[in-house]
Length: 480
Ligand code: 9MR
Image 1: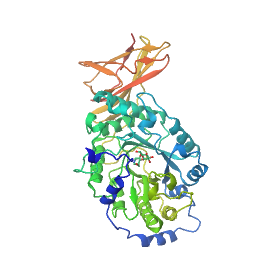
Image 2 (image 1 turned 90 degrees about the vertical axis):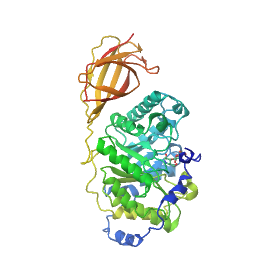
Image 3 (image 1 turned 180 degrees about the horizontal axis):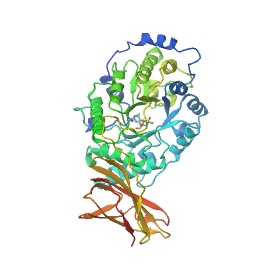
């Protein structure tokens, strides 16, 4: 599906598509801005983007690249102006798991620890995407790919557990053309089918229940575009079936004059599904007052909707932007504030306080709840050199997800077998990081070729989703 694949330049051609999709004109609110700014009581206006956003309970973030952190003006501007961050490339699959099972977090850790030291919110970007995916992933069989996806989610989210405000769990899965709901053809759809999105979200909830889980995409800024409606329908379906999802990310790579007239309506209609909305990769090509007007409209659209919880611009300075030729950011190449900066600051300062901040990962009233039940793990007696503990990490009507931790005793283990018996007719629908054999209600799971060796005192995990009522049967572990 060539028309759906990304161009080699990392997506620059999408902007053409964006322009085609977006409704022209639509700058009718300009006249209101001065009046809004003027209504801010003297002394109430904050002087930086982060502080201004915080007044209404929101964040204002920037994408940050670890490679630029040696530029002191870059870091100084980030620290001064922003209270949130998204690593621009450092958490992507090619950066974090360049070869199977071998994880690297150095660059991402650099951004995370800096952000933490400044009390910033951190958005995790991104776990499952067709782009910046190392070639070893595309070569896997269906069952290996499923295991690799869940293992990647578990390991990356596990590494940052408790530190991430929101994760872009799945990025850019919808196609730019075709009927409403058409997914982009990728290794994910080809091998796992369209259900890969749901599988990823279920695994993500189990991996870090404290993080908000977002679906993130571009060209979903226009409320009536078919791509937008496809995402809208997916979220509605997830909420109705209790598939965990907390937020939608509108990337909003825009150009001056191309902010859709229904942009605020779009945010509001997503929010009405019971998810937060975040503007995740905002940049607006252009300059001067036209660019400032577009930024102002985007900001006002977010602050007008209580569940629009924050905005992230895709970079600090034009000079490092992925589309620097379009000068799309709020600071020029010398870190001088542009007209667009002032427009954003004024719009943030004019926002009325957000009185209904959304609780973390709460189900909306119109959904079947998907509680994160975490009863204390049932531990097996140590019968051999290993022990196993099973816990329910998610459940929903008619199904559940479990994680089994296999631990070596005082000696290293080379190969392990975990067994249990289902108490009430449960059945595994999908298992990762193990190989299963089932006989009636008896289940046997053995290690795969990559996780059989466990050092003394260390552990590995496997997991599964299952049909039926959540259960934590007693499990045994033996090692040859
Ligand atoms: O800004 C990122 C750029 O440095 C990378 O080269 C590019 C590679 O795909 O990804 C850019 O970020 C993208 C983001 O991760 C997802 N949405 C589109 C962004 C711009 O292409």
